[in-house]
Amino acid sequence: MLKNFWYACEFSSAITNKPKRVPLLNQQFVLYRNSQTQVVAFLDQCPHQGAALSNGWLKNDCIRCPYHGWKFQNDGTCIEAPANQPGVSIPKKASLKVYSVLEKYGFVWLFWGDLPEKERPPLPSFPEVKNPALRPLQFEFKWNAHYTRLVENSIDPAHSAFVHANSFGSGMAQQPQLPEYETYLEDWGGSSLINLKQHTPKGIFWRYTHRKNYSEIKTIRSFYMPNIIFSDFERFISFVAHVPVNEYTTVSKFIQFRSFLTQPWADAIFRKYSVKINQEDKLVVESQRPKIIPYNLTDEIHTSSDALSLAYRKLRKKCLDMGWATAPF
Image 1 (cartoon, rainbow, N blue to C red):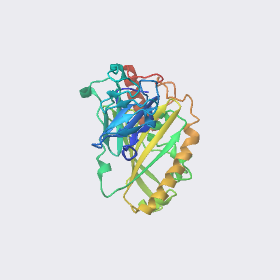
Image 2: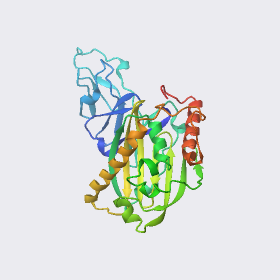
Image 3: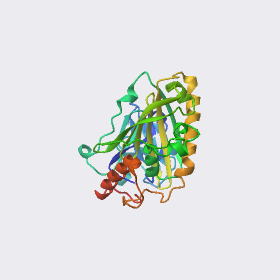
Image 4: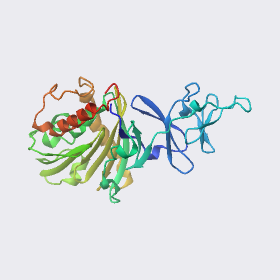
């Protein structure tokens, strides 16, 4: 796992004035909104005797520990330990560390690392998600897999003809060859553009976007370090945060956008279809060994169709070489 990045850890809509536990990077955080609707983030652990603050409650803009009632302000300062006699001071060590958070693209982002604010990698730029003509749909999917394998799965175009032969990859099943494509690299990410000539795949999505039996589909896949994915299949856009819970578990949080069938009743159809696709990936991704993609670029074989995945591995290796690893990486 990598430090010194902003991690999209939860949907903005999931954070309210009720403390919520958010697992991330082998840690447990507690997030809530204060009276100004700003998100506050601490480790989900009272410094007194380790109780989970997420089981507590908010009152007068402070979070109260459920075990002994210790009371913490939004800046992490403990201002009350109810069992203490009057005049007994509260140790300064009782303060909670406040973690930097931002809200953008429908997510709460938490910074994990030790870089000064001005040196931190910026959030990615995805202006498409602000398009009012697009219908957003949020859902999540849990995997028993390391997030690096899911990032690669999301940006890999070659597996669709086999893993998704009964869904959106059905149009490639008889013609799995991919055209040569270029990758476009940035400081903290990369993207690819592929024009696929294929038979119209199965499924309601493709029936609305490609009415001909044989068509060319422009696909854009992008990654942003360390775990953000953006894909554009013309009238269907996905923004995904593969949230690393620990080395064995990832929760993928999706916000999909579509420019057709934008009525609310259609959400259930697209949610069901997306779950089907993830279930197809699940069997394969959870079987991969080693669980974490290798540090050495030559430990697994790569071909030209793996260009974007290889770009991700190179950028990840660069981060590891800078000392940005948190064990296990």
